[in-house]
Length: 445
Image (cartoon, rainbow, N blue to C red; front, top):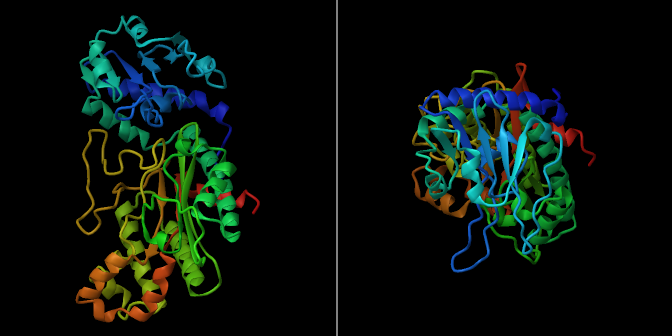
């Protein structure tokens, strides 16, 4: 098991140096002399003075571990120490942020600002800066013309696919935290708690507020496991407990973990199928090697799903014939995985070069989010599943292949919803590293 260093404070300086190299290179794609990168602004809800939960601009977050301070900016000038314009308003309605502290502050020129009006003076020496952020009106008010230019973003997004040692450490720590939550959720399931209560056990274990998780967690019981992005939490327990699917992550300095597990309430056929999906998930991870195209893994996984459908007597045809007739896509309608990093579905999954050329998946796999060749220091998910989704099964029943389905066996599994197993993977020094299994192995159950 290849370890990932989590000595974050020791890895940050080289991370910052790498970002400076990347940003200087990105500047060469346009005529510009620096960057102004916004952390983001609070957005008010319609006809109200309340705001949506704040989500930091990932370009800002990559520079420094601040995820909760809207109105701040990074100023980058080639060859100079980076500048943080740290927003700290004099506000008695809300608690102002504390002064910056931690392992990273000595690497920065930190200047406190209390209003947007102070930004202009701090960038007055930049003749043609690039603005990165969602606040176009703000950039225009500063007289900045180059707002999120495509050549710059293409270069930065492609480079972001390759994680620094600092970033790998953050994602490993995020997995460690997420696993603590998954174990708490499993225990809550065994106590027969509701989806709502399982979610709160998860959040308590990872010590996150719901809005600070990298994505809305999925806690599905029974047939709700068949809803791929199930978005509710039932507040009362079901009459009968059959299955739990938990897809929930955690963050470390803004870097995400994205972990899924499925549990059966009792021994039996569904538990056997969960075990079999887990075995096939580990087998497809064993197939990973530097240079393999992710789409190949996706197709190999579909053949493995076909093998399971045959093994469990759900479909009466060979795995090869199932693949030829697209039957596996009824039971696995999503892609095998995606890039992971500062965003759960991280950028550049289709991007083939720094110049922005994209390779889209074929029409059979419209939900696949990753078409890249696998390389060192990328982080991506492997998340196969088998689901019993009534609407898709209805389509299969009406198709020419419907006669080859053992419907009695399939219908027995519909109340369980489905199965997904998801790990976070990287390649380091030629070795496949499973960040999620590392975390489970190092956490007492």
